Amino acid sequence: MQAVILAAGEGKRLRPFTDSMPKPMVNVQGRPILEYVISALPGNVKEIILVVGYKSDAIKKYFGDFFVDKRLSYVFQAEPKGTADALCAARNLLTSEYFILLNGDDLYHPEDLKIFLSPRPTVFVKHSKTPERFGVCLLNEEGFIAKIIEKPQNPPSSLVNTGAYILNHEIWDVPVAVLPGRELYLAEQIGDWAEKRPVCAHEVKFWNPINNPEELEEAKQCDLKAIFPSLN
Image (cartoon, rainbow, N blue to C red; front, top):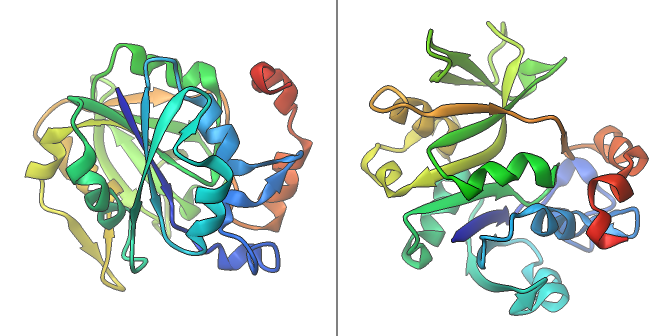
């Protein structure tokens, strides 16, 4: 099985930490964020496709071609055109029927990702106190994803998209959503996909996005030794 990890971000809101390194390489309790992301993946993932961009040499130097018994491949996103564009960069390397996609600068819990052992189209979600900052997820009566609204001013729900998904190749049959700024957003595309077939909503018990110094500090206060015992 394969995983795609989006690791091309520059992380302007995390300056000066990202002046000399890409956002996924920012240090949290002695390790780069990306190391925790890779370590959270279940054992059935044998290959990781890393979509890199800003200062990508730092990622390649640290992780190489193999890391924690997983083979790593790299594709380059030349311009920051959004998450759907980043996924498209990895398309030619995706050969498994299902794949898991994660942000390379968010912390996820290994237990939450174990549902990839029995894959089906899924959006990983969590309730947030600031849903207007994220993609808000609406569910239908059966509990499946009905719609994803990107950063609404008046959120109709507190349930948000964590940027983690289980996808299959059907996603390529759905037109990519182009939002203001000409960025190509995967969340909107998956919302459209959910209108055509059931897409599960899996509520995670832990998710720590790291988009600003406050969230970075929160990550530094987490009990990561308990979450990632294999790294102790």
